[in-house]
Image 1: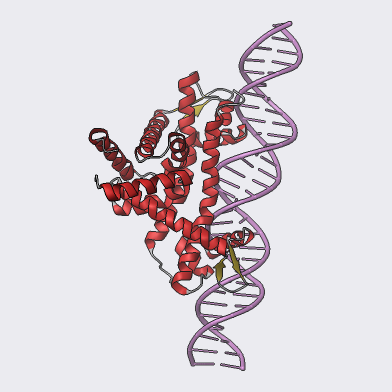
Image 2 (image 1 turned 180 degrees about the horizontal axis):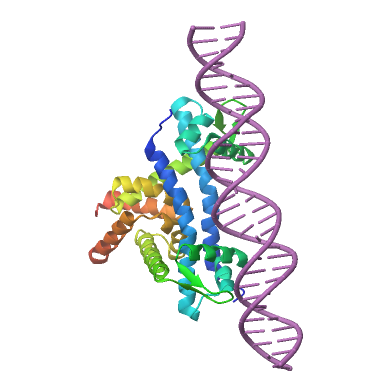
Length: 144
Length: 144
DNA sequence: CGCGAAATGTAGCCTGGGCTACAACTTTGG
DNA sequence: CCAAAGTTGTAGCCCAGGCTACATTTCGCG
């Protein structure tokens, strides 16, 4: 028992990495939302919506800036880079698909929204594509 | 913008809490698996399978003991309490349902296994029940 | 304009989960 | 039966994400 099944390990590792990426995704999506609503995303608003204290949001934004997803000048609003905006759009799209899939298989709307928030970060590209294909099928086929 | 939509906050909080619970669930399931295979779960084996160093597994087991999910005497194997075993069974069952659901909507088998590992921890009771109902339906209905 | 309120930034601490290094205990085989 | 090997436990560190407290800057308004 020194090697152990690599599949296991890989699976858990994936989960841990996803947890890390999830944070950035949440922030990027939130910043994009706020930009749409108010024209810019303020630290206070980001923090409030995410339910964290403002220094926490500040740290997170600093990380996004380091990663090239956002930009901001001191005491000014936060804006996404093109890369950040692309990620936000991707996250938003995935969220919609996951919610739609959940609803399509019979999950109540409010529950679908809540669960999707956690689930979406673990949905791989291939699974996402499978979801989309399924939704396309059930749109036309109408078996539910 | 001081109150903000509580739905948002609740959603994110749920995700964060789930991330914390996920660890315990992984360990409990693994301990249960090892108990079935070898009669007991040794720290070294738990660590190896989860892909972490043994002190990490040790800490996690200490936490499970604190939470009443496991018991162990120094330098001896780890065993689940009834509560821990129940949780393990529940986690295992949920994993099976999530994998089955993913496959049912067209996700390739290997991908389903990997993604389920991350997704399952965010599947609420109500969503799980919806999954089960859907699977029951598609078993008999056979629309795929 | 100038001052108080609000927003942002910074410092420093806590917790949890991960690691390495090392100590203590068990097992095993010569 | 006892030393070496293996296993478990402990100490102490790191990092990330969260918080509070406090400093600084900007904004709004009299």
